[in-house]
Image 1 (spheres, rainbow, N blue to C red):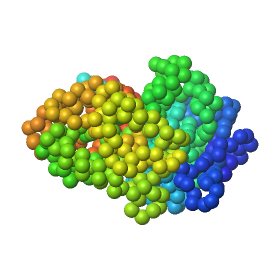
Image 2 (cartoon, rainbow, N blue to C red):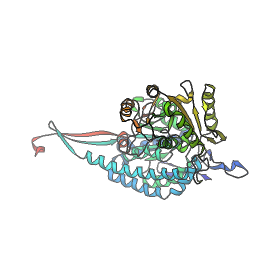
Image 3 (cartoon, rainbow, N blue to C red):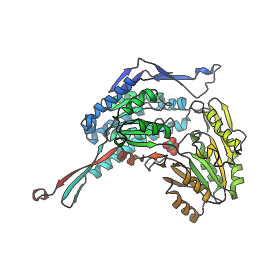
Image 4 (cartoon, rainbow, N blue to C red):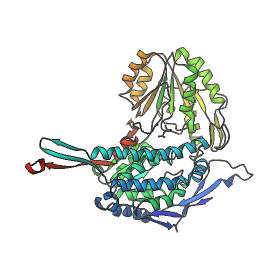
Length: 495
Ligand code: G3H
């Protein structure tokens, strides 16, 4: 077990003397005694320690006059490069913890690590471009102007459990490189895998620039938010938590929010869709990492002309998937890390079945306390929870349609607006659909599942799905503000 008894605040790795939170793996260790899945513990911090972390970030920022916010960009880039090389040394340990802590497959865990390194390197390149643009001089109506980007202040970063490394870093890294200082709280699941990186944070950044807190939101986050000293809230998770956090800030007009929230991305499968290709995309679209991705396809609308054949083939493809352990060869599905998740999925399922939905596949349902084999659910309609709510797990609701207005109405009325997929070949029908959908969601995928990457593309959403945009270069903008020096042209400076 990893007993993480050290924490990083104000540039020091201090030893935690208070209570600890045990961490249990969702993986059933194959021994006679299943309780051996205890994999470590982390500090359950109190209010005083959380406020010390905040003060350290506030002091390091020092109203924009601290060493970090005033450091030339090239030097900040050097710090980040140093961080990357220290981080790379920890790959094995981090990948192992991704598997044990959140049950991500070996392949996906390695991908998450490598994608994060690539994200940081791309951020460095994007920053160089941004800086090059900024050093250009503009002369207009007798004014010589130089426009730069400056930091915003103290950022509270909170990442999600499904991408505890990669997605968390899509706010943390741009916030840091733009000269802000940070208080960072990892999600409830996936805390231990950040322990191997504590030394890298400590060595790469000046004191107080990165401060990491752990524990219950009530004890740790509420005091930080109610202090009114946070300038930017960077949160990826549920709408409810985001709304609660925003309300805790005493001066909402002084808080900028950068949010990645929930989604209910539909696939609209037209009558001329290529069946085999569409099934392949919809299997990974709905079920990679067990459907625990905000970008997952969370409802399928299938045209009645191909409905029967599609459903039969899709259902048998789902039943042929392998549920196993993250390091198993050919594993597709793994245990779910959220507490009681199979039971919660079962409740959503029962609600739908009571209202007329039908389970189509043989193997679907609860396997044990942490595993749930995917359920293909047909006859789904708007009276059911599964039609509207984000399931964030392996239930695939299916709706039959004959008029394209039906899925369109679904997207228009949804509380969410992240992405949608269209599968088909009729260019005229698809282009009409695209025109309708681009005003509802932020990415329309043609003959492809929904996804965030490649990370240079803008990643955002409408309605309850997001606030602010998180591509590599957009994120640099979101965590900074444009400032300008304007010099009046005179006879002498004209020369
Ligand atoms: O959970 C939401 C993630 O941003 C999804 O990212 O599409 O790369 O899996 P992904």
